[in-house]
Length: 370
Image (cartoon, rainbow, N blue to C red; front, side):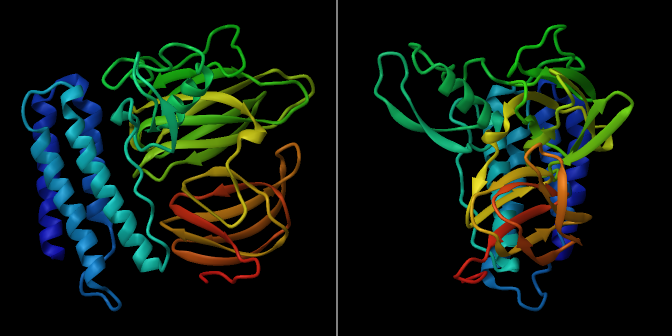
C-alpha cells in the first residue's frame, strides 16, 4: 500500500500541473487544496505494516486515499467555483480520515466530525451551531464558521441575518495586499490575498486585546506585529486546515492602532482576513482543548498537572501570559511528536507555539487518559 500511496501522490502532482494549464483562475484555490492534501498524504509517516497498526487505522488511510481520488475526479472539467463544492466536501472527508488515523495512533479520542459551513462550504468546517431562519421560514440550527457566526450574532434583529447558501457574503476573495483604511474602527476586518499588511484599531483603551486571523484555505502563515522598529512573529496553522487563530496585542501607553504583516509559507497567495477582539473572546477550557499551529487559549481550572500532546514537526512550547498578555513563564517545551507533562500555574491565558496539531489535557483528579 505504501508503493500505491506514492504512485497516487505522483499522479496527484501530475494532475495538479495539468489542471493549472486548463483550470479557470477562479478554481485556483480549489486546485491548491487538492495539491496540499496530496502532499499531506505523501508526507504522512503511517505504514500499514508498522507495529501496532490496526484494521481501523488502515481503513482511515484507505478512506483518505479514496477521498483524494474523488476530489480529483470531481475537479476535472470546465466548472465554476460554486460547482466545485463537491471537491471541498471530498477533501474534508479525507482530512477527517487522516485526523482519525492520527488520533488512533496517539491513543486520543477520535475527533468530532463537524459539517462544513452552512452558508458557504468554502469557508471550511463549522465551529459551532447557531439558530437561523430564511426569509419567512422556520428557525433551525445550522453549522457556521467563525466569520459567519460573528455576522449572525451581530444581525439577529434583521430580517435576513446572513446570506443564504450560495449567495455572496463572507467569502474571502478580496484581491490586493490587504491594506487597512486610514481610520480603522475597532472590529473592522482587514482583508487581503497573499503577503500583505494592515492596521487595526484596538477595542478599548486599557484593556488587552487579540488579533484574530483567518485564512480561506489550508495554510501555514506568519503574522508579524510591528511596534516601531520591533518585529514579533507568530506562526499560525499547520498547512492542512484553514487558519483561525489569535495572537496577543500588547498595549503601549495610549496606543490605539496596531500594525501587522502577513507572510505565507512557500510563497503561497491564500486569502486572509484579520480583526481585533477583546481578550475575553479567547477560547476557554477546564479539562481539554485542541488545535493546530500557534494560538491562544484560556484555562479556567485550578493549577495542577496537565499534559501537552503534540503531533507534527518542529518545536512546541506552552507559555503562560500575564494580565497584559505579555509572556510570564514557560510551562513546557518539546519537539516533534511528544507528550509533555507540565504543571499549569493556574487560571489565565496561555499561548501555544507549534507547527503541528496539539491537545492540552488538565489532569485534575481523574488522571490523563482516564
